[in-house]
Amino acid sequence: MTKIISVNAGSSSLKFQLFEMPEETVLTSGLVERIGFEDAVFTIKVNGEKVSKTLPILDHEKAVSLLLEALVEHKIVTSLDEIKGVGHRAVHGGEAFASSTVVTEEVVSIFESLSELAPLHNPAGLVGYRAFHKNLPKAGHVFVFDTAFHQTMQPSTYMYALPMEYYRNYKIRKYGFHGTSHMYVSRRCAELMNRDPKELKIVTCHLGNGASITAVDGGVSVNTSMGFTPLAGIMMGTRSGDIDPAVVTYLMRKTGMDADEVENVLNKKSGMLGVSELSSDARDIEAGVNAGNEQAILTQELYINRVINTVGGYIAQMGGVDAIVFTGGIGENDSKIRLGIANALNGAFGVKIDADKNQVRGEETLLSTPDSRVALWLIPTNEELMIARDAYRLLDFS
Image (cartoon, rainbow, N blue to C red; front, side, top):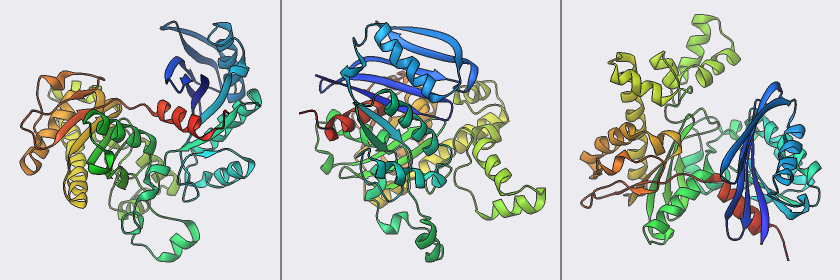
């Protein structure tokens, strides 16, 4: 038995989950929030109960030290030497990494050079890695890339219709994100259907505050909605998703905003928040819909429209579909959004949803009716498990 810790480091947060492998038993999980502040919050699950405390945690190194000390303090491990591997979520691997990779100095150097492609995510991932490497120097480390699953896309899918010099010089192309989630739920869907993934055409819908949709044909990604950055694709909590590119320069001329300011609007002030002028949270939008708020109603309709346009296009690209999967915070918990998407797809693709089964939240469930032409699944994502699996697979414990 081997203990592997899965880590997801954000700019001010750190999520973790400790596994016993290969049994895939979860020993504990937790979260450090508001890193860099005097009132940071550290939460760890002990014997099934959450234990939280508020204290100053001024950097990731302190956060890592704190969580590792807690593992020993709560007797989850007797010694940190028991932790043999660390799997790190790495958001952007560019074209350099087509699969998860054991971390070496060269890998760190390449990953760091890709930070300009993901300035909010890659630097945070590096800080998290360095903090764990310092505290667990005997453990092996693996980077698991969000972009890797989508490296199977063909040039006709991932290239943009821009002058080729921008691809050659700056690697501007579609990369896609949420790959670990899309890989997990597509494989789990095949398991639940008792089918070989190579036989199936699946559309996976990771719908959360950040959201993306992926076409998985024969077990590999053939298209995905996010692009060069996680701003592209469908409408999200605060992100616009796809818009006419000319809107950017038009807004700059009209408002006097510079490029960074427009990018901030598109990333942080648009999407559900921008259209509804209420909230970026789908639960608040639903409350607005129930209260008859016209902008909330428009927001929900716009969201469903963007999803079905993408799903329909991917079904056409694959030449059919066997299953559609909902995952992510909205996908797993918002029954009205799921119902709206399914009903909108029914006419063209014969997607029929069982209204009673659809009331479920966050549990693996076959949502479609027996006469539906397409299987409709709710499958909670488990990126941490995929990270642990890859770390265990790649590290040598012999």
